[in-house]
Length: 164
Image (cartoon, rainbow, N blue to C red):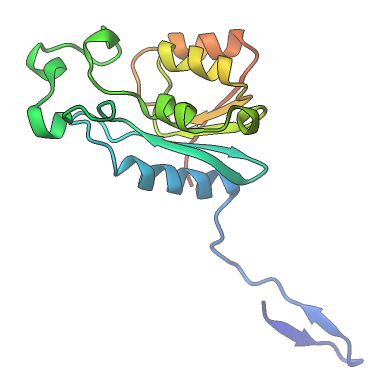
């Protein structure tokens, strides 16, 4: 910050415009980076669970541990022409939100915020509700609204991230 002297010798701080991101911008930037680890051919989804502005856990979408990834063997959902938001059981992948919850400490997640670059599906919404997460910030790119309704019914605050 630039300091400017006043006439009587005391200092006054002038406000210089900075490009410091808001907390939501900061966490969503990290979500985008986490999503780059995704092995899904359809979407690169990332999730970050945060409490008191400290990362609790991260997750991205991809095949379960030890199984071949869709980037290696192809996408069964694409082959079967299954639209997004339907027939979740056909997908071999684990969603980003699910991976973040699975890898996080349950005690630390209580009261946390989940940031994700997609709207949570109904399966993820149920896991979020049981995890103790109290707020979900998401980007509105998912055709199914049932997950958001489950979150609201569970008393979990939801917010659509609009970016800068």
